[in-house]
Image 1 (cartoon, rainbow, N blue to C red):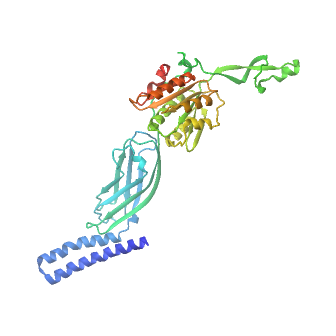
Image 2 (tube, rainbow, N blue to C red; image 1 turned 90 degrees about the vertical axis):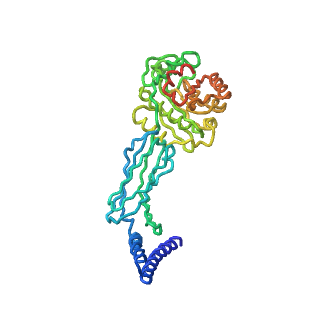
Image 3 (cartoon, rainbow, N blue to C red; image 1 turned 120 degrees about the vertical axis):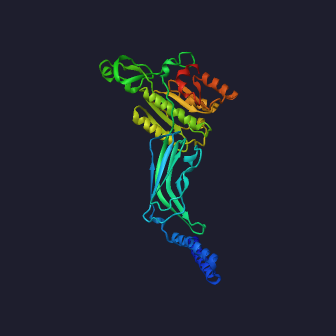
Length: 405
């Protein structure tokens, strides 16, 4: 019904334009003189243009969108080029071009630049370039390009939306860090002086008497068959430099800073040759095994590019009911922007088998800790954890100053 009404409205405008042309002609015929005929002849081009525009098909437009690059990082600019080609060079007084994209693309931009008015006249190829500065992290969808034009009087306006779907994934920004394994950093008495010793069960180095608590798989059955005595295999012991990051996705004003910090830590640890894994809890649960290599970095960055602070429960409650514990020995890094007693107690229980736990408290520049946060910092220290305050702009020195935490 609505489309039918719009069609009647457009036809009515066309008839009104023809009526105006007939009125000016009648006026010139009956009045005569230079002024009346000048008015009639002056009105003819505008009337003909409006009628021509009424029948001009915008469907013959061919639209292309070109992105300067697809390897994007938060904070970088993105240049977009829209090219419109047409085969019928009818003069267009103006052409409105709008790139339809998710509003989040312009979240940090100085202006919304995806819309512009161009004066093409007889041009067969029309080009629009615009740049989005300071790209926000996340997934942004370009859905279509909308074009519109009209006559001088504004009686006839035509508009068409051309589907042109593309997606851009903006990865989080990062800061170059000089990561050092924590075995060399906690020698000041605030935490264990070295990482947990991990047995390499692929290489047995000897036998010893069986002790209560030894695993069933460690028993040397051949010696038991010979001597009828239980012996336990001894294994080569080695230190583990693996890291497990626990990302707090509780809604926070500092969440983007937390993502930047997490991405920086991931990059620093993997560049050092160590292994790293990631756990994040929100509307969706994400768990990445502890691995190394470029592929692991790409997978973690892909998650960090799309993740949101959409957790409906506090981190403490989530950890209490998580039911997921890594058997692999790894130092745990918790990245958060707030502290609470519940999260500290839950983290202590959750990470009871981990060799060391560090809580990175991410804050904005010049944001001071509250009295409650300072007391919770002391509580975490009494539980064998280290709380390191990381402020925006100072991420680079995180691991060189963690000793002072």
